[in-house]
Amino acid sequence: MAEDIGSTVPRRQLGRLLRQFRNEAGVTLDAAAEALEYSRQKIWRLECGMGSVRVLDVKAMCELYGVSPEMTEAMRGLAVETKSKGWWHAYGDAVPSWFELYVGLESAASRLRGYDESLIPGILQTKEYAHALYRLGGRLSEEDRERAVQVRLQRQSLLVRRLPAAPRLEAVLSEAVLRRGVGGPAVMGGQLDQLLKLSELPNLSVRVLPLAAGPQPGAVAGSFVILDFPPTKGGRTAPEPSVVYSESLTGALYLDKPDELAAYERVWRGLDALALGEAESKDMIKRLIGEIRHD
Image (cartoon, rainbow, N blue to C red; front, side):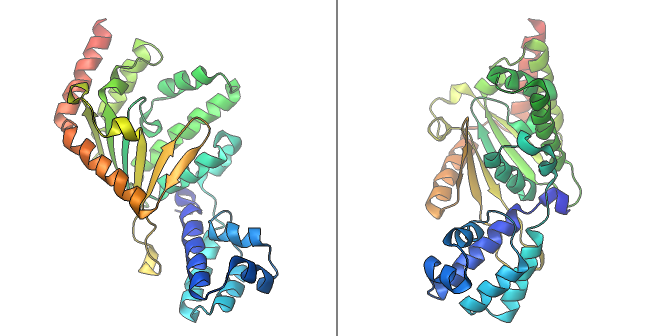
């Protein structure tokens, strides 16, 4: 289980708790750094969930902030979990640092809701489709490109894992995504076949937003994923807050403020109302496969 989930969520949970108790104790970052003989940067990094945390550090900070023994013990347990490594660490630089956080969150999520307006989302791509996309960039060597594709394929295993339970994935794809030829007819036909196959999974929903729907909320928001998380083990800490992930060429945004989440929830409701149902979406994908292979 540790390899499936990794340390991403425990790090973020622990960081939030450390910041919460420091604020409740009225201790500034500078005052905490001076009292603990830490650098200000170290405390900031711990509170942001960046990196593993020593149990000794948690104990010292909890003592300074006057945290109860029970909560201190729970936070010590989280500190132990921050040292576990996820499967993606084995791929090294094939997982950029800004994307590593997403892979960890994706592995820990109980529900993923994604809208894509340009390409098939990575977690649903075939090997051939992914290779065709990576060749477009031309920045990676053959070996690095192969490793990057393997990461993408490995991510798909979470859709059928048994423990922890596989997340529910709800994907809304613009019709343009399905019509945009990537890698030639054979590659695109195979990719659409893959969508049909994956949509048979009980925890996976693939729906198409038809071009005929006209202007819609996703045209402004762009592609994004909303990640929701399960209750924590034993209920000792609050569940991980939902996060919106929005990716660009060289980085990504992780949005978790209440007003940001509310804005994307509104967009999702708009997309949900306009998208075809699952059965209609499958029919459209089958028609497009027929068009590709007939040509």
